[in-house]
Image (cartoon, rainbow, N blue to C red):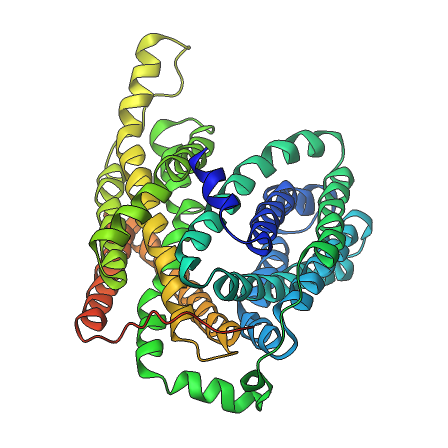
Length: 424
């Protein structure tokens, strides 16, 4: 109830975008978790081809986010959000009808392009509309997206059991509804004169803002660390428990922790800590999460061959304790660090350039994640060869500590601004 009361206290436009955030995550995760299996089984594509099609989506979204942010500043966030939702509607409809690889590739590209449009635009709109309450708004947006990401696969698993085309059709329908609804419900905001400057000038000014650039680079690791919910944690949970359902439990625990604690943590930290130090607290919790994860990688997997008994259940629960602690700490850390990071990025932006700054920060996060995942994968390979499976966890923890130190230095030097952004 606290969450709903806080959401209702924000402006109607922000409330529309909170529902939009839930709908986008819900519609996206109805389909995406099942896409790889569909491409492999229904279209008989190789693992390399499946990986390439999925990778195209990530590349388009992360690589073009800056374009979406600039478009939000230049043309207004509202039309960019609407176009993004419409593109994703078309993309998911294409997955329902495409029977050739070229169609599947085009659909994947459109899914990524759509995200590159509406993600920075929605964040920029929220930052401007919420003003001094943008921290609360970003926290609520995270909660809405988290709930959508958890519930989407539940419906998707039912639909895919019938036919993947139903899955794609329902996803497309959700984005169609979001598109039409926002045409009527989302108010227009005027474009600021500064946003009409030449593209190169706006980006150059952002890149010459040393405080912003340092902060964007330091916090770019957050997306890489967040990705461990889809990589390290579920893989290790499945390995150490010997139970395929353990991966789903990671997402369930994370969602419950977010729903139960995020708003309380944000409010407490807002009263007691400067914004940069709140991010440092989050990064320290994230770094700590990789200690039990590293320990778990050295453990012998639980016996999954026995019959369902008390001893078998106890064995799985004991094996899962380090993963549970790691999930708890990683969730708490990200729930603090991510809203504060968005809040500060918005605070750096001059009048009318909120989308550009958010786009640049998101692009930096995408580059860091691409390079980081490659390095972490290489470290995993070395860990198996050298019988040191904890190497990747140590690397991730070290990255979090390094980011915490960098943000602490920026905060100590007074380089972290919190001025409310102006219209986008």
